Length: 98
Length: 377
Image (tube, rainbow over all chains, first blue to last red; front, side):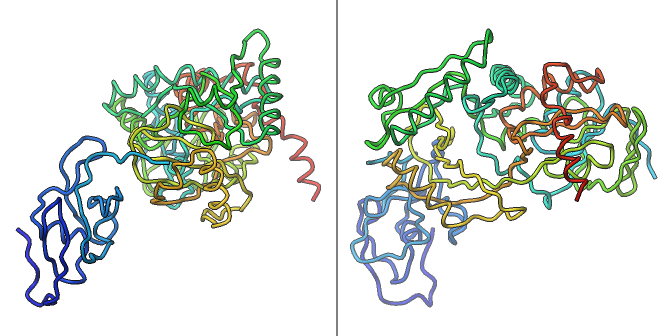
């Protein structure tokens, strides 16, 4: 459904989206990587459990919450990918930790 | 020029004004709410959301009683709003704790609670002082710096925004009228007859209720009511949503139904400046993280400040104008806690045209000397 624009950089960065290896253009955000990886929904609502996906892609709407390198509730559209980054769906509310 | 007759004009569309207006409408009266608009200070939009009893009324048992009454009424009030509108206020009467981080704090707290119980007289006041171990059984998330807490079953919390939305919806459903962008500049007052013109419309009613928060100060002067409320700034930190971790609110921290943690409790005199300051937010965050260490690993998503509507003695102000009977003021800094009392009881006093003796302590008579001092300058 999503593909990089034609003028996107040739340099690509290998990341792991929901456990699968994906190469995305350098400078992409984690949210873009999720979409390029064909993730479909990228989280489930903390309240209703409904499937959700990135919406505004500019840090305002919090629809793109995801787990990045094991850290839950990250705004995927505000994080630039780096090599080997693990990006996973955020399912429901995160647990707190001490 | 349209002329519309109502049973009451309410100035202010926040939690206080709308609660009284809904209270009138549910008794079959025809109220109209004139709301200034988003340039107003909007205390109801910045409210922390506690329905709180255990800090109210030291030395003023009337305030303890009135607050307890509202807290006891809240469950039925919330159920009624949900039945009428389908909107859940988020209210839970879960009990609440005031957490102490030193032996000294805990001792002072215990003294205060004993005072409330003593002053409650035959009305009673049940509370417990909990040490660290006892509190840990109630709230497992407390950190090692927590020494203890006071606990009462009377406390709880609600979502101020859903409550306000439900009140507005219920008001309209019962035939009430809401007029936005209606700033009141002048009031034509006579005994039990009030006329206000906003734009092209003139509103007339035998009753007038000032429920306009900090605006009541200036509005009161138009109808012979002395309402010396001043802004008291509170700052609030809001975190990301996390799985349920707090089974009840503390005076400073509560977890919403949605999972968000809210951190508040600051109090400053900053005039009408409703912006946040890093120093206060730092102090709030530090104390919150000492109380609940998991907060050190919880992301803050926003902060805000809002202005409480504060009388010089911190009590609500309930009065009917002696000069223009039929004009009432209803103002307080606990618009959420007292919402049930305002809707279920205060609205009735407005209809009756008399405030009952048990609320005499909240009359503006207590400011008469303040007025005298001011007028000497």
